[in-house]
Image (cartoon, rainbow over all chains, first blue to last red; front, top):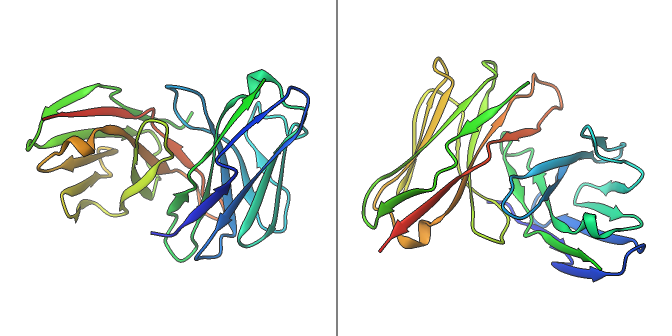
Amino acid sequence: GAVVSQHPSRVICKSGTSVKIECRSLDFQATTMFWYRQFPKQSLMLMATSNEGSKATYEQGVEKDKFLINHASLTLSTLTVTSAHPEDSSFYICSARDSGWYNEQFFGPGTRLTVL
Amino acid sequence: QKEVEQNSGPLSVPEGAIASLNCTYSDRGSQSFFWYRQYSGKSPELIMSIYSNGDQEDGRFTAQLNKASQYVSLLIRDSQPSDSATYLCAVNMGSGGSNYKLTFGKGTLLTVNP
């Protein structure tokens, strides 16, 4: 399958700071990337759909001013958690859709965010 | 509301047995169906995709799709302890165009006992 990377894999920050997470498709071009959040022992929750060159589409209840998404190229999308608070601590996972594979999404390894 | 339902389990099988995981979905127009495996603390890994009625086999894994019954399943033959994980059923319920979102079930926890 296609390879998706995420950086950093783990981040610990103080409350009030902003954290940027990068998601890269390494061996394919991804016109569409997705950002998910997963709390312990819970299912994946889609936060937003990121399309290259256009504004992200956020799911209901997700604050677009708090979770800034930029999909500036066909291989890179970034998620910035602004003014992070302890309740934002979670496992953030991106996925990328390979247009060469019908609707298949490949996940990055995830970023574990801890806000103190 | 569009939904994907899975039995949360846990499903426990002995090593070498067949594990059967089931999933139903609400949107009759769904076209693409996927099974992901997620180990504890890790991200999901795509293991099977299926798009048409019938069976799709890949090694020890077989995905089965019945669109009339809105049902998709995953069989794991010769189960191994390393198969112990949460299995997520995902369905693309997009009505075409650029809607490629997946709707995930809550996952079934599988434990394979040595």
